[in-house]
Length: 338
Image 1 (cartoon, helix red, strand yellow):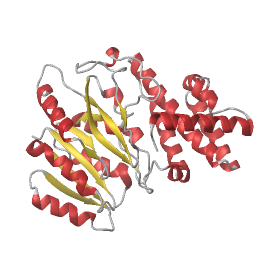
Image 2 (tube, rainbow, N blue to C red):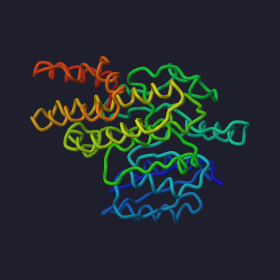
Image 3 (cartoon, rainbow, N blue to C red):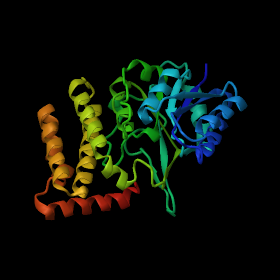
Image 4 (tube, helix red, strand yellow):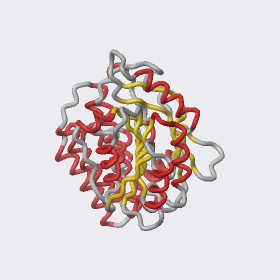
């Protein structure tokens, strides 16, 4: 059995997928790399087949009709044979030194008295043209190099969230938790790092800069113009997360607080881009989204709506909206996203 499955969703990725795949091959025979060709119309599928032919037993090429990033991740989970599972987007890469450290630690933790459900590592915002690369790390929230439960975590401060780039799951946990990401929908990575959490009983933080998250292509989903044009999909994902949180029993108080805080940031992101769109229809959608939260989960509505971020997204009038956008721009500079 392989130690780690790396799923690489690819759609028309011929120009950059090679760099990603080459960075994953450093793992050698202990890993399997699933190149998931999501109905590409360029040479992505052919390149995937060539990699499979060149690295049999390590690389598998899987071809499917276009279903979007979420469906490619679903396919990866279904086909994974490794003990652990990670998604690596085709324009990103793994750092070789950190990658080997992760494999060493996963090997060490496998077969112990406790089963590891989730590993966290740092990731780097590899923003095109930026001289200083922002690193997302978790020392203030999770003890370093210790197999723990949620009760041993500390408060995740604003801006320190578990994202797809930072997480490695136990494969069987993903296959058994019932998560199915929606097709043809952007921003489902938020669901990926949200729905499995109540099933995670043990986690381990290895503070190495494993994942290099590239930011700079105009067609990226996190490009600001694209986020505004696809805001309906962001709203759809946010509503799905609201419903999941409402319907799922989360017994651990610290995990419940973290998941509610994640909902808060989803509400803020949706709100800010609707405010930036600025037209009446978008402002109506913002009001309707907050009403949706109120109607589905009254407790979460009051806690999120009356938080500092919630209040800042609901300031009255045009002046209030300018203040909201100004706060977003400051956060943008501090965190380094988009």
